[in-house]
Length: 131
Image (cartoon, rainbow, N blue to C red):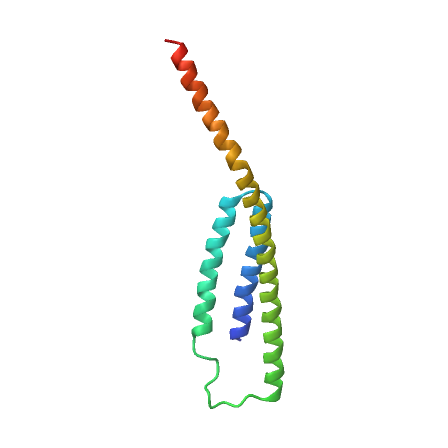
């Protein structure tokens, strides 16, 4: 039996959820390159999800669904909603971690620039006295 549209959507959203968790682990290890690779994977999956959502529906408009199918549809919607909420929560936490790391870099950058200027001045002073 082929998978329903909701089941396919759930699978793709679950992959995005897992990637969001992996992104957090990458951020915690300061592995920004891996985090960006995971972001690219998410973009690809989001593209597949968008194409799936934009496809015509499973049933023609003139088909009436039975009450049991409506309950199943509500369960599907609840499952999809739960995964989406999980993704959003991970993304919020990832954004917080990334913002904290950027704040640390902003604080450190002036010290690095000062060190560079001092090293450049030291080299210039050293090469002038060696002549």
